[in-house]
Amino acid sequence: MNIVVLVKQVPDTAAARTLSETDHSLDRANTDLVLDEINERAAEEALTLKETTDAEVTVVSMGPDSALDAIRKVLAMGADRGIHIRDDRLQGADVVSTAKVLAAAVRTVADVDLVLAGNATTDGQASAVPAVVADLLGLPQLTHVRALALDAGRVRAERETESGQVTLEAPLPALVSVTEKINEPRYPSFKGIMAAKKKPVVTIGLDDLFPDADDTGFLVTRTRVLEAVPRPARVAGVRVTDDGSAGRQLAAHLIARKLL
Amino acid sequence: MPDVLVLVDHDGERVHKSTYELLAAARRLGDPAAVLVGTPGTSARLKESLARHGATGVHAAESAEAGEFVGSLAVDALLLAVRTVSPAAVLVSATTDGKEVAGRLAARLDAGLLIDAVDLDSSGAVTQVVFGGSYTVRSEVSHGIPVIALRPGSFEPEEHPVEAVEHELVLPPIDPAGSARVIARRATPAGDRPELTEASVVVSGGRGVGGADGFEVVEELADALGGAVGASRAAVDAGYYPHQYQVGQTGKTVSPQLYIALGISGAIQHLAGMQTSRTIVAVNKDPDAPVFAVADYGVVGDLFSVAPQLTREVAARRGVA
Ligand SMILES: Cc1cc2nc3c(=O)[nH]c(=O)nc-3n(C[C@H](O)[C@H](O)[C@H](O)COP(=O)(O)OP(=O)(O)OC[C@H]3O[C@@H](n4cnc5c(N)ncnc54)[C@H](O)[C@@H]3O)c2cc1C
Image (cartoon, rainbow over all chains, first blue to last red; front, side, top):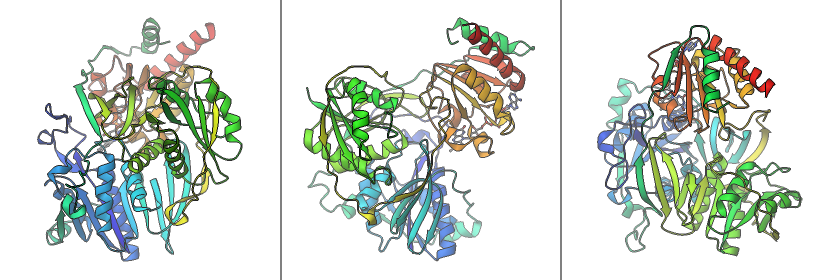
């Protein structure tokens, strides 16, 4: 079995995130970067499968130098090897280009049975990249999955969205994106962290994946930001301490505001 | 006027309100035309209500297998319709399924994708709110036919009766090796409550509610207000309330007229999903809870006495009105 896990490094949501004034891109200098927590669960799922199916797990991440930290973390959790896609030209890549690059990187891994990803990352809310990667690779997509089982060359998954729950089934190879409800990720052990330093990570760029990228004018994005304005922070309003009548006072307040 | 394609969300019998919102938004750019995927007979049932909301055409792909594949048929149908009418834009609802369909369509068209738009102007530029409500961004598509996913509830549905011309779309056969099949379905009971992302009032409970039974207090207040119920991640993780009601960074983003947070501390990841609400009310025992920094009206107190009292007041007022 060959499993590929797609992971991304994102700004820690525990801190405020800012956009750079010049090009409206994420201001990475002013943020703590972490392995996205849902991607971490995709990695956990891959490693659980590795224990039962003897799989080789390749972790793929696209991003600047720092993305190597995210890859190393998954290697420390137990993955076997990494692919770091690093190219300054990919800065600001849109959903379509991100998916194209990730799909091309998956194609460099021989005989892939399963591609795992998070259903969303906490820094974008598009939640579309895994579906597009599946589409580009011609793989069945089982996205937003909270439970997963492999058996006899098939994958079965519980998909949960606002329109309800469905059980999906598909032949391998397939792409699965998981939600944060699927598992609890393991912590890398000290031994794992030491071992991760010796595991192979190849660094590749746009030209390795698309040799004629410059000639074909590889598009990095198909959208343009016209303006980005910070929203005014909310300010605290009225505050009361309940003396037994706060519910009634609140009702009166809502009526006065025409909210009732 | 150019055509603007709108993907129809429906349950086979009824068109979802979010589709009427898309039709209203589409009219800013051109003549809305609906693209519909369903089992045979669906188009005949839904055509009239689509025409009443401004759809000048209905491109219908009917197949006995509709519903057995998540999203794939919609992508194929939109692609075919795009090839037929060369639209000015394609609009879908920014639901979980809609966002994936939009992404796959944009990739196949090599076109720009704008997801989770809350507004759209006649030039095709959209407004998005990013990073949990900390920035408002205006963007436009610079390459290809704009594919835009509009957040449900951002537009008002409008009646705009027209004649709808029907077109049949003949889809290519599904490739079994490239598709996941739905083998069982458990619909979320819709109940009488409005959909979380569309509701004008949301009452959310957190860990402070203390248990699944405690959520009755949250539900009763929501019902008195005609609102939806939400939950913090801590409440969901503790099993008090189902996952699909989670509000926040990794849950739903809501932006109602009134958001009431009961027993929620106000962690930054929760605020990310609700801080664009018009008015925020918080009830929390802890006067130092961070939620009070964003609340327009904060009550320091026990939710089990404050919320039922508010529920009774609301019910009494509704009873009189
Ligand atoms: C990457 C990441 C993503 C996350 N995504 C989300 C997300 O999408 N949504 C989300 O909500 N969280 C999210 N979280 C979790 C978030 O950080 C908080 O842990 C969570 O929001 C806390 O939920 P809570 O406020 O219900 O619980 P707590 O923080 O435990 O707060 C409970 C509150 O209830 C009050 N209380 C207790 N009893 C009563 C009573 N009887 N009456 C009144 N008040 C009472 C307490 O004073 C306390 O303030 C995420 C975290 C991470 C790291």
